[in-house]
Length: 492
Picture (cartoon, rainbow, N blue to C red):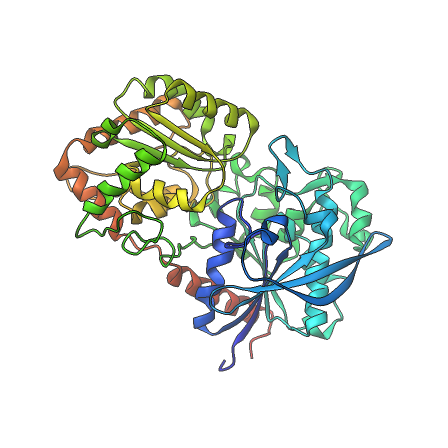
């Protein structure tokens, strides 16, 4: 195929515009790496307050659309910006839905009208294609917030010639968040009644938007090979394991890449000093800078500094961490944490910082600049997740010579290899059982090697030489797009 492959990305978030987690990193990076492989990309996402306040150049297109929701027609405003590589990003604006401090929930819980917000968004993404005359050969949509897109294309827009040659790929970034709502909300979708059944959108007498994506997309991907296997089991499938096993022939695990243009200590503009595997002296300057940033004891320069950047949620293993905190601080270590999330953890870690003011630094915020400083300045990076579809921070940490201590689940298991002192191979430390003692034991094992320079230096080199670039992942996605199109008889 000589001409570019037309791809529409439909996502609820993307850097640099709006972010709550790794999905935004993926959605902001993958299109930039698909474009040089011969894809013509457009992206669509909601026009949140976070987008409006991002300071990035945005323009109002003086174009409005009417979007049906239930018996009503609601007006959407359209804004546009670009990713660095000139990829157009369209924003669906409706202030009552998206002009809010948070994207999906406050620290106290989900927004009450998330069904309306994302039914509207999914339908608007399709109507936008009609308005701008864009006929995508592939729609790649992400997470439950976009789950209705293929349901609409299989029903209401089935006869629209604009989508007659469209293959649909749905990516699950985290199956625990499914977009489950009361069955009464089904009427808002405008979908035919027969789609509300156990083989379709119905889920225990409710509607499930993620299930819609799984049932009606042509192919489903997850963000690591291990996670694609895990979600077919009752332990990790959150009630959708049956439908995923049924569709296993169309289920693929493609490990997320990272954008080394953004995450590389040799040219990271956020760092006080740059460094590389050949010369790590800049990392010591970054550690000193990070200690100063959190106003910790300068003596920590010579002790292991543990870092975390995370959504504060049970999924991320914060219950394990809470159990070992007091014992952890009896060790000669420092600890820094950046993140927002569940109120109980925001309160807990604010208290930890008060209790150990010279050993623990906590910032309850989203702060990209500080995230880069933590990746560079910490010695160890903790990710004790209950489950982790892919995880990006452990991959960033590798590049920055910051050694991950992780639980062996999902993408953490796929990317981290336990260090073996006999062969000097491996890039981190991992534990299997979801257990506070196992977690603490691995932290202690890592600290032991920190004080053995011949092993620590080797570990850092092993970590920094690992390659998880987006080029590899983008190539796998392009192959999948082609395969799905061929299967549907759409290749040209």
